[in-house]
Image (cartoon, rainbow, N blue to C red; front, side):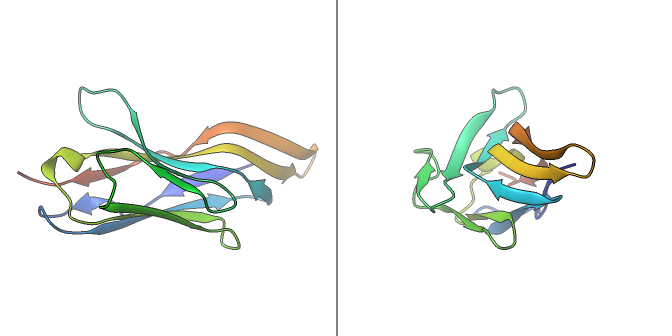
Length: 126
């Protein structure tokens, strides 16, 4: 099967930085757009940043100029570099892939659509 695993979360002071990797595991053939979302306590989940397989990126206005999304296709990993962190960045950060093509041992080539990781907590105290 396939797994998306986020890491790198933690507690950081305002103005600090964190880098969140999102690694895909499994016999993966390709991953198209990868996204980072976040959900603060009591709020709706929001899209933070996206990156296509070709490297085109998009950002939420609230993080432009502070966050950078990147990916290493060979390592099947996306990254979210977060700088100048603010208390309002506190949330659980989730990695998501729009579509993953992978090989199942018994069923052959398969497709996972809108696939999510388990999330990682980022806390920026005020």
